[in-house]
Image 1 (cartoon, rainbow, N blue to C red):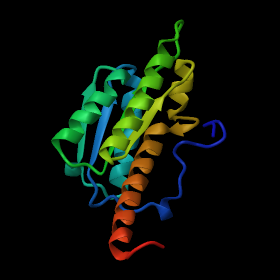
Image 2 (tube, helix red, strand yellow; image 1 turned 45 degrees about the vertical axis):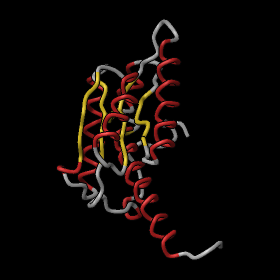
Image 3 (tube, rainbow, N blue to C red; image 1 turned 180 degrees about the vertical axis):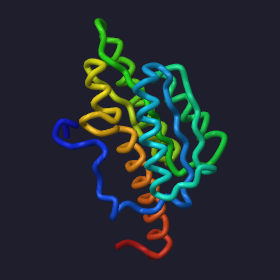
Length: 173
């Protein structure tokens, strides 16, 4: 759904599980820092709002969006996380570089999540211009960082819920 039709910061708080016992890695690209740091603030504040403990949130910065996947992999190799949130912004320019970067990162995070079994969240803005990025980094369409944090909490909780359900079942259902 286009963010023009749904605010990125709106979600059903009552149905979001607590993040109290969850561990998160956040990888933030420095390229387009004005945008990515606003996304990070929305993400971090949302995790804290839902009871994540600061000491259970590890943040690392990388030069650009393309480097998000490698940093996510490094985090996963060095500590156990319930979810990794990757935050970046690639603004379309005069060339098609954005298509290569966005596609590579999306596929890389999908593959990393599948291989590791840990949700790797795509919190990357892919706007046509800077104003669209501003509108989605706390502007009129909300903050994609909030959406990324909510997605991470939900996916981590889903994994835990299914793990508990598997232990209770015997045979096929």
